[in-house]
Image (cartoon, rainbow, N blue to C red; front, side):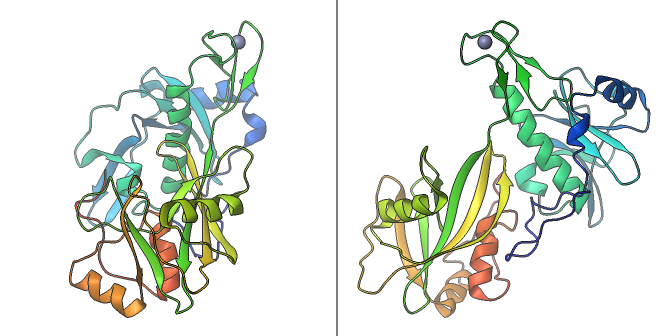
Length: 311
Ligand SMILES: [Zn+2]
């Protein structure tokens, strides 16, 4: 049985799933067919990274439909709860919203949903993103056929099997000898938004090598001592964020790569708090691992989020 996986960062918004993925059932067509016929089975419809949610005061939850009301679309098994309820996802246009219901993106509600629902939506969005963009065999261009559980696909011509893609990315908080934190503003971000540095792991590269390379490329800073903190999926569209701390030895000057970053600066805890309170800076939202890494360094919660929220 799955349970929220703790990291040194505490509970990360998108790493809280509680539903057993029952991986052994993914090719068990009898079991899958029986589950799909069971009216207790719950189906989560996802479209373009969003699903329907229902809000009641402070409580927000996913809206599921029974299998016979699910729209046609690519189907995939999400798992089975401790009460034996089976969950499927379907990638299809969202059903009409009922009273108190509305479409919401994972980015918007990932930190607000309860553990079970946050895990199901993260899983469903990640799989739907893969199905939506990997429809053909990369070897011969034939349309692939999803396997019964929807966690792989097979080419009917050459028999090659294809599996969901996850792109590892590193995200790292760099400190100087005074324990100041390096925050940067991406060239593509408007206004006051800042965050820590991040980048994709390249083929043939370790996560640690990617941290060193990305920090040097983006800021000219050479880091030495790395420490892994934890990870969370970020299926927007298909990343796994690997969080690190890194130290920058003294005597270095920031040289920003203007193609990637608009600016980057060192902040003490006092400077960061003052800048956030003065609304000179806005930090990433709680759904992101970046926010957790920054608050882990800071030593507690910080005010401010990106505004308006990124959808
Ligand atoms: Zn093929």
